Amino acid sequence: MMRAIRTYTPADRAAGPDFWIRDETSITRIAEAHRHDYFQVQLNLAGRTEHHIAAAVRPLGPGGLSFVLPYRVHRVPHPPRSKFYVLSFNLRFLRPELDVDPLDLEDVPLSQAPELAPFLFQEYMDFRLSGGDLALARDACRRMAAENARRRYGSAELIRGCLLLLLGTVCASHERAITRLAAGKAQRASRRDALARVMRHVRENLGRRLQLADAAAAADLSPNYLAHLIKKETGRTFVDLLTERRMEKARELLAHTDRRIGEIARATGFEDEAYFARRFRQRYAVSPRQFRTRHAMSGKS
Image (cartoon, rainbow, N blue to C red):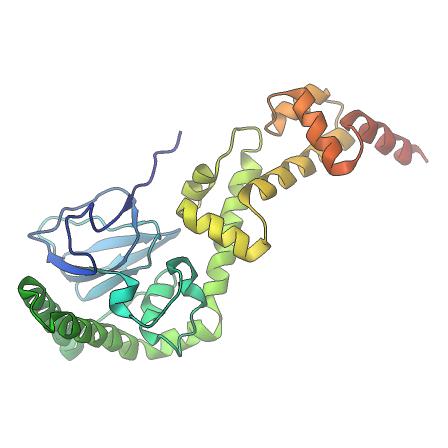
């Protein structure tokens, strides 16, 4: 059985409700793959590691940054003597006026919120700053940390300004690659790739008891995101897709093998032959036996 992937909230991390920042001396490190319901940015200052996000693995060396959307499965192992800042914040803090479900952020035009680009394209490119840009980013993190510790009147605005300065610097430094990916509709390709991973897992495990959480874990997605993605891309539910694939496989086995109907039921994930026959009739208006007979007759004609 696949290990459950935990979703963290601000309360789980003992952090503020809208924004918090920590460095390597104060953060609780999470080694296993996980997700959270907020944005996260890591600025790596020393040490080399990798950023595992969805099905991609990106290098993360000194000056590198990682960007994580809400509910995106990821992990960043921290080697000894590494130095970094981790920033976490919710959408309302970043963009108070942007009223959109976090699961729909891929549909927000970059012209409306250009600072989302690093989060949307993290699976496809590496982000790294050097020289003056890196110094600016490091200083912005220091200022955010100091202001977040004070939390006085106006702190939120000062922190947001530094955060947007950091994100804007990254976007400007990687403008050409971002523009190319945006023109190629990388977000759409990412969704197609994710669905392809899910359907491959379904095809390879039709005989097992499949649940949404299993398919999501196999595709490095969160169950919420996968359910939302399937509905957005196909207009159906995971159960609808699973049933469709099982029925298609059952038709194939009935038509091209002499396996008993009970065996076919079990091979396509139905423990009870009578239930399988009932669902098959509901879908095709004939019983499995009638379907096999008609297919055999049509082959002889």
